[in-house]
Length: 412
Image (cartoon, rainbow, N blue to C red):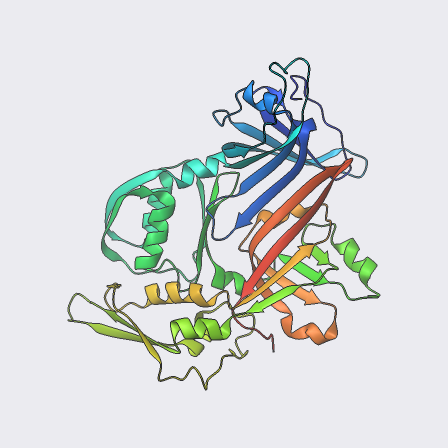
């Protein structure tokens, strides 16, 4: 039952408090899932509660009220180490109503699993703000800064590798902030590489160049533990800092080299329309492009594909994008996205006390398998997405599933 009086039972790792208006639903929470991705503009959070449907119907919990989730990180002696609040907006709720007595609210309690899907309210409001403007002689950075200034967001913009061209005129038709920035990246290219755009729960809006992140020191390190690993305890001790994580479970790896080359073709030609020329052709060799603009952990690594079936004589033409004079940034931006996910690693992270750090998608990750034969999978990746799960069985137990990406299959 939701309660007027709030209270928490410390668990020694994480604790949660869920408020809907002035009612505390913390005791009814049984599962929480936090999903973050570089392909989504903001985080989504799904709650599973053990409730009587009457508590939803009679209290009219239909999405008109702001949800407030408080996440508390506790020390070993159950003192609050860190705490942050997230305001949420309900998207939908789902529950089953069984056949019962005519009037049950004071007699019969029939608890059911209630699922409520939410998104972070501030980021949602920011990314769906309608913008409309005309710009003259501006760079893409200047345009993005001005558009974001019309919202309550705090912009975190990566300057390395940015498109420095001064564009004569840009017309921003009425659309959401998220769609406008994505469209600018498609037409002009914000970076000579993969741009990601997302807003965190604290209203910080990130515009990042993933190619630059691959060249920086890793933010996270993830280990796959080997059977009978003598350094197991040492690795587990490292994982208390929120920067190191480990899995003792299978790692799923996927490589789509031939599929990508068959769709894109080994040779690509972009026919653009500069202002002083009838047309101009930009040609890219896909294998060379992967090394120059892909998410490469090692620029000496080979890009594997079947050269017999996919010969250089196979050419694909792009003619719908007018481009900006003879500039190639829009090609580099769009094509780098297509080759950024040739390699995917998926793994389940074992329980970790600072697992919420994995909401920081787009960061550089060093993957270290402790099995020697797997050393070709080592080195840098990008954290594409994470699903952080908490379930309550007496105490809250946390786990996470992460997906890492890069372009090169082998590290050496």
